[in-house]
Amino acid sequence: MTMRLPLLLAGLLLFSGHTALAVDQPNSALVAQLPPQDSAGRMEFFNRELDRAEQLYDNLMFDEADRVADMTIARINAFLGQNRGIEGVDEIEAVYTARVNQLRQLKAFKAAAREQMERDGAANYDQKRAARERKLREQREHQYRMAVEARRIAEARAARWWSIWAGRSYSPILIFN
Image (cartoon, rainbow, N blue to C red; front, side, top):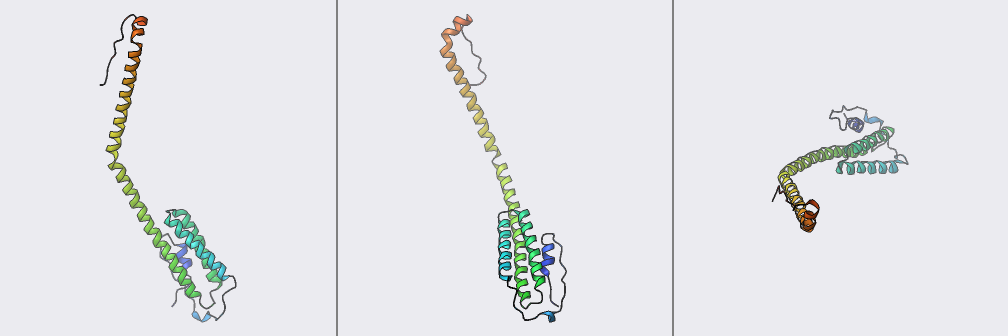
């Protein structure tokens, strides 16, 4: 028994986690023929699209990568189905099956890496909370000291005029030294 169209079944269930059932067809239908003329161009397109999906997974763009992979797998399955009777199709199918399995493993690897990166980032953020709070407190204290200093400078400049205008000397109230 040989497995036929595992890409179709694996592609449709690529990221759902369900197992695919094999479709059996007899090998006697294989005929020594040349592949279709457009096969090289179509296969090059499939490879570029699978490379693109791989790059998207590598860049943690899972939704777009899933979309590209699913579309490409559907096209590959249609291509393989059209050429099922041509000799060598099983080997071509095996290559594409391996590529799809590689994509599945890359997605799992990158998803785990992203989750770990998020956990590390959260831990780092929490770890540096005390330093951030201390820095903010120091910044507020500095701003208050600068405001006190600006007030003192203004008082010193206006001391003579204050007593003339207010009829008494200025008496400052200090809240923080």
